[in-house]
Amino acid sequence: MENPDIFGTLPLELQVDTLKLLSPESLIAAIHASPALCNAFNSKGSQHLICHYIITRDMEKSIFPVASALYHAKLTTWTTDNSMKLEDKSGAEYTQKVVDFCDKHLKGHDPAAFDLGNIDLKMMLAFTKFHNVVPDIAELIAVEAGKHIPKARRPSEWARLIKCVYMYELARVIVPYLVVQNSNVDLTAWCKFWGCFAPWEAAGLELLEKVVPRLAWTKDGEPSGYRSCTEFWVNWGVRGLYDRLHGNTLATAAHSNVEDLREYPSCSLFDRVCSSRSTWNSSVGHSDNSLRRVLEIVRRFPGEHHAGPRDVYLWSELYKRVRMHSPLKGMERGWGGIFWPMEHTNINVQFCHCPRLKRFSIQDRRNLDSMFPGRYPTFDAMIQEAEAIAKGEH
Image (cartoon, rainbow, N blue to C red; front, top):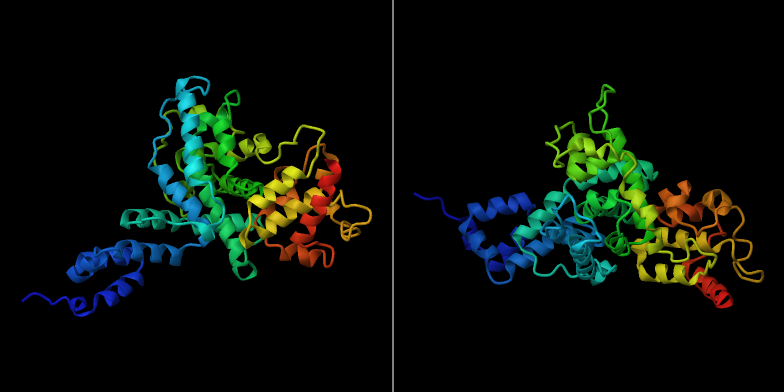
């Protein structure tokens, strides 16, 4: 006698609610084991509803846009031509493909307005499979950002750490090593990609790349043979970092000639972030240090999930320009220790040039509020001051 399917006695609504409470792995097991739950899952609109619920339950909202972009990027063939030069036809086609992709999948910055669309089981499983390995890598970045104690960090700071890992993998998929290592090619695609993110988000990648050399050495102090950030980036990405962290053997290198990679030991994602910083600040390299571009940047990234690093970015550009009779006058005292060595350069403040700023690309505003009580203006006050100064510069 066959065992009865007890779930078949439940109303459809309860069957769907039951499936929503499961983990992705348990969901697969349930719909294979129970005909009733399988029918409920495949009933009109239920698959989308259940998968959407599981993803929004297990992932931070600020991750949705970049996670969706990563999913679609992995379904796209970017380039397989190892002799590609961006000035020839294949290079032009690749560049246009990146531009179109960024316009379609990375255009918005507000997670609250993001729609996951008609997500199905395949997409949900791809999301969660990658997301399951991300927290362990994010914990390593947290050490570099001074946020290694879970109880001492806020959810928004954890979300920034998670997003940093996603950005690393997305950059690895969309902009291949072939493009990044060649400094003589047109960087339109690279700049287009980074233009979809805030400068403080890109700065977090250097914190991640500091983790790679530590993972590239075995526990007994012997080199693993994969000592280059470039080699991890090209061949293994986040999954390789995760496997290395847990002592697993790395898969065979995807690159046909690993020795070629070692000819470029300094090539890294962050190297190219620095070289394309004009994506965010068009005044770099020019005498015009207008705040107009800075205002444009910070306004592009609204919401509390950007508030901490966005505020310090704006203040780093503003604090030495405060007007004599400004309400902010006097608040700038003592900030040189945070923004050094920016004070001694001729370029606008960028996270990539100031070692002490990098950790603030992750941290919330409250960290600097406590360090400078009464001397850290609110975001609205800084905007008003920047607008007043910008008018004078015009």
